[in-house]
Picture 1 (cartoon, rainbow, N blue to C red):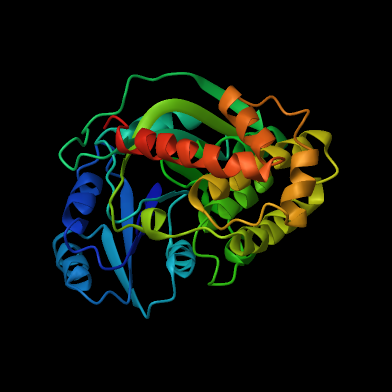
Picture 2: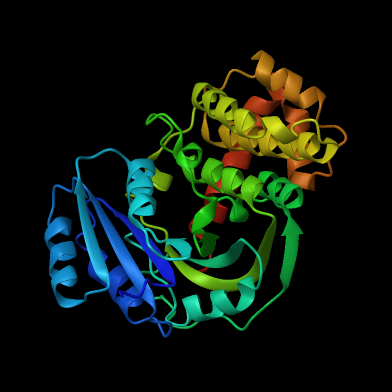
Length: 325
């Protein structure tokens, strides 16, 4: 009888030949070795597919699936449908995991259905860490509490540094149109959190996220139209718990963060749009930072905002540039 792996690591792959080997090496050398690695080559046009095949020929724990450019959501779905492990872990093909990450995550997840760890954002390509940080705060949340925190805290929205019980996955988890190109993992995490009974959340760093200039996160330009479309799917995901007072308030934090980002990055944003004006009316009760309160008031005075926003954008961009690695 063939023994099934304990953890299935799913890696969507697309045109990452410069970084892929580093990613795979960090997985095959994990101190916890009862794993399988599913590399889903999503129609790469460079040598990524060949790199996947080479590693699969050298390590029996690796399986490769070649698909025709259907996007990251389809790649994750393909991996999940073919996974055999009790647990699912997603890794982006240009990132890495500290070598003791899986061991630490299994230790922390306990009897929960899901674990969300923290990640280290790396701007310097040589600054990767091979070990997890010392275990930090570890808490357990009920489903609704976790979703509230997701809506308020962007760090909980991505799949990085997470473990999911495979039984949580069904077709609804990946039910999104392909034109949702950013935030698809946010919706996935909310859907999985809604199905989990308990979620472990830790500030321990178990993932190395590389901030690369050409990545989707850095090249995608958000628009008000896109964010409205995205929210439609997010609200539909929250439908069964939308009557919760806590969820409603957390959703305002999500909306405010979206508009703040648009306001700081989009010079042509229509501040008279009904979506924006209604949102501002409903943010007075939120516990916002000083910077956020300034921005909220600027919405009301477009002439003042025109000059002030130039300064705010410069400060925002400077903060992004000088972030420590």
